[in-house]
Length: 380
Image 1 (tube, rainbow, N blue to C red):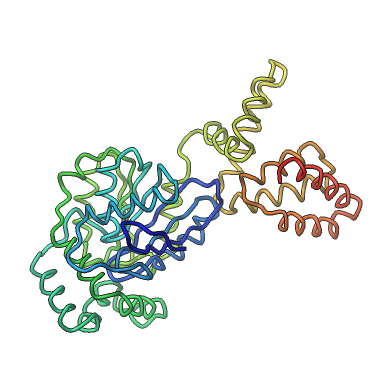
Image 2: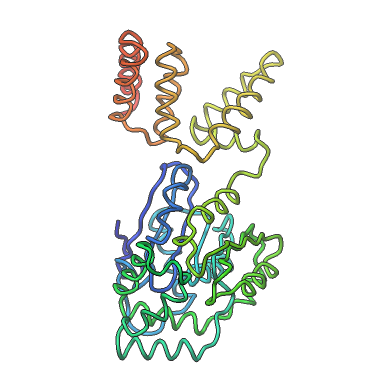
């Protein structure tokens, strides 16, 4: 979709359940939101994944002149405002990670955690950036193509289809966008603002990264108190593409709820079933069933619904099919109402019940269709 932010058309991909926790992923210089494709495919099962193209990159409009980290961070703030999103998990690679640091320092209340991949507080030398900006403005992106790609991936990966995709992203980046963002990198020294961060963070880096080497990530890790450092073997500057599974695992492990299963389950139960329903369940609990309420919150919601292998929409449809097949009328209606929060559409529910008719019997599916029509009448 396209959203107007600061009078430019910003292209953004939004994937995952409508009720999912927002996760923003920012790409690197000269690429686009596509460098997070592999991670988004997995993360969108549980999170509301938001991937904008930076100013002058991908399908987002460019403006002329030098950009700053402050400008790019405010682009993000404007985008989140337009999407009516408050607090997010925020990840970024290279310049995306620098923007993330700037944004977290200026908008700390809006950042739940940071995922900083192959980035730094500063990327010297300034002279290199000035030369690159001059070259691009005079000769075009093609003049720097080979030198840039050699730093993005390891030598053994250059001929891979994914690396050719990276080359295509670079070639289609606008000169104004590339030069503007390069100027932002050249001028940036985030040490002072990053030292103020108290946000949970993970720092990820490829072991063969020449652009932002392990030493830069170690410095970043040392500056952000309590952060974790993960080194990806056999990867250079863009491990999201070169070693996608390793990066995805690092992010999933970091974002997996570290709360006790009960606390994590309580949060998910409220998000799926609604605060009012959960409040009623606990208000009506007595000594007789209080342990049972804790058991289902901890086990069903805290250990199963929190797993990243399926998104909430898929779990919702599975639950409907199973409860329909078993004739669990009360649970079936409860989870039908919950589809308002999980994002399962009426059409998808009908397909799940057609499937139920084949594998669990027509009478069970017939009863489920009848109950579904009753529940759908409650809210258009």
